[in-house]
Length: 127
Image (tube, rainbow, N blue to C red):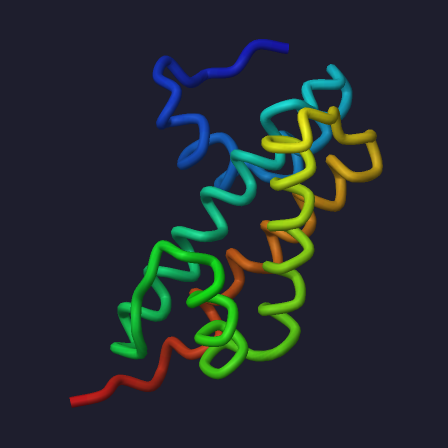
């Protein structure tokens, strides 16, 4: 199976988000687990940052600051999922461990849930 993307940044935007159901199976089927947590965490963190910024509720690149903001403005469930994804990212990136196939699938599922924050409150705008 060959990816239609020509540049690495297109993978996260076009392949991963637009075709997530197809690509999560692609990632796991080839046991490409080493970068999955990083990709999922990075995209999820940016999603949360953008969502909070659009709501004018705060912004930070630090997870310690993002978690309470996420819980307060995006809900406890999203904050819990983000924390679990962060733990997988830490294990993979800094623990120098490969994720299991199950952990890889979980990272992808967590990211999908976080991507849903864009649809949580699209009708309310503040003046």
